[in-house]
Length: 79
Image (cartoon, rainbow, N blue to C red; front, top):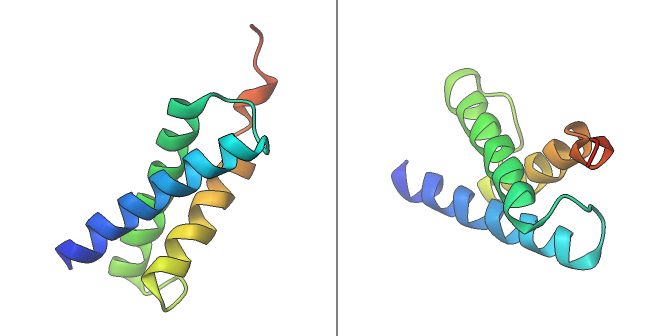
């Protein structure tokens, strides 16, 4: 259980960095990574407690990270 959690956080961090590097979002590197890790934690605990989610943990981490970046519109905030 613990290695899956560490892998989820690692994959979410990579997804957050990659999405920001490609220009999909304009949040900044750290906010994108934090948003992705938060979404991956949420999906991990939903899978653990209720069984809701995709079966492979890596795919679950990638999909939930991208979903969190789409749901949280921090690029619309005022500067």
